[in-house]
Length: 426
Image (cartoon, rainbow, N blue to C red; front, top):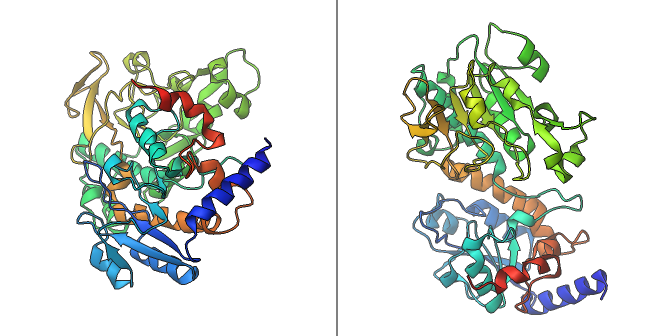
C-alpha cells in the first residue's frame, strides 16, 4: 500500500472521529506527574487567542491547584473550567500523562518519552493503544526538513546559563544570585544578573547551538562578557571576561585526519575522536548545550579531569546525560538543591565548596524554574507551528509524522518499529 494512500486513510479515520457537528473541543490537561510540574501547554491568553482565531474551536481547561497560571486567570479570559475533559476531542498537556488520566478515543498531545523505546514508559504506550488514543508526541513534531518545531530547549538554555553563573558566584564567593525558581519571572532573573562580577581573566566555553545553545546566549548577552572565536580563545589571554561557543567540528575530528563533514559525523560518530580536552586548561567554566549520541566519543573524560593544568571549576551541564559524555555529571540535581561537587581524583561526589572540587549544576528539568515564561514560549510555538496543521490543512504531514498511534488502537506507520517494544511484557 502506498504512503499517500496510507495517509489518506489515516486522515479520513481521524477526522470522522474528531469532528462533531463542526466543533472541535481542545482540553488543557491538569498535570498529574509527581513531583508536580507547574508549566502549561497554553497560557490563559493563548487559549483565548485560539478561541478567537478559530470559530469552530472551543477550549476547556481542567481545574488545577498547582499551575503557574491560576484557574481564575483562565476564567478571566472567558474560558470554561471543568473537572474532567471527557467532552474534548484533543487534550494537550506537558509531561507524561498518568495512565489513570487517559481517556479512550481521544487525541492527546504531550511528551511521552516512548519513541526511543524507553522501558519506564512502555506500559503508558500500551494503554494508549488499548484505549484507541491518538498520541501526538511533541518530541517528534518536525518540519519537512526534519527540524523540531516545538520544545522547552530555549528555556533550558536560559535557566541553565543563569544557574551556571549562580554556581560560579557561590563556588568562588564572588557574588550571590537569587535562585531562578524563586524569581517571579524572567524580568527578575535579568535584574539579578546585574550582580554578576567576573574576574578579568575569566573564560567560559560552551558546546552546542540549537534551541538550548541559543537560549544560553540570551543570558550571556546580558552579562559583561565578550564573545571570541575558538582559535582566539585558545591562543590568547584577556584582561576582560570572555567566552567562546563551539560547533561540533571545534571539538571532534575524524580519526583518519580527513576533512570534517558535519553530516558524516551525525551518521557515523564512531569514526571521530573528541578533542575538547584542549579547552580544559583555558576555561574556568564549561556549559554543555550539545546533543550527544551514545555512539560518539566522550567529551570530558575522567582522565581529562585528572590532568595537570585543569582550570575548570564549574560545569553547568544543561544537556545532563548521566554517566555520559561529561564525567563530572554523575547524577541529576534538583531545583531545590542544584549544585553538587565532583572530586576528579576519587571520582566521587563531595561538597562543591571543597578545594579541588568541580561544582556541578545538573538540574534535569530547568524550564520548570521559570514556568510562566517557559510556558508562554512553548505555547507561542504551539500556536504558530502545530495548531494550524492540527486543525486544518497539513501539506507537510507534520501531524501525521508525529502521531505515534491512531484512533483505531494501532501504531501509526512511521512508528511501526515500536511493535516489539509494546509487545514486550518485561
